[in-house]
Image 1 (cartoon, helix red, strand yellow):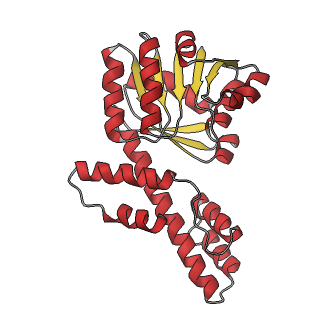
Image 2 (tube, rainbow, N blue to C red):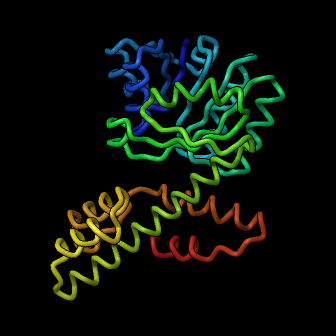
Image 3 (cartoon, rainbow, N blue to C red):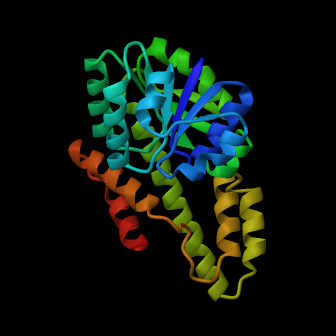
Length: 264
């Protein structure tokens, strides 16, 4: 099976490396072509345009930053994919866009699967990613082994295409809220003269024994005093997407707005 992979950022690169190491014939594309060099050295075929990748592959996986980037690459894919090819989107995008993309792909007889991924680059290297997946059942079975071989566990959320995207947004909301809570309680403990390392040792081995709290507390303890839990604008993007979904559903969801104010 020939696999196409679009997006070789901090997370995309180790996912693609895992696929290559598993033995797939891998075609890769990245807007900044130099990022594909490590994969080319390991045997991946580097494409200079999305068109060539789409025409060569059976299944295409993509992971890019936001709705705008997904729309851009999907437009190219839709011009060059043909039935029964499959596009698997690993990006964190809006539920509205997921439904639009499914419709656009279906109009051309192309399959579309939502598979947003949970995990940082180090989790990808350790093959400890988690994929929330939704879409047509038969196609998900085609995709499952590929996602597992890319370093992840697959969690199935049914055939409603946007279900997996909402799971991802809810998960990121919980991560962001936890990160901010960790930052704030560490700040007040430190200002009060508490031994914050001992505090987090207790928390991480008892009340909050989870990779999330262990990872973010370690990062915050190592960061300069006053530094935030997040250094990118991804949290703001994802909180905005969840708030937009809540508004469309007529649901009051005040905490994302509060967190966005805290992160500004």
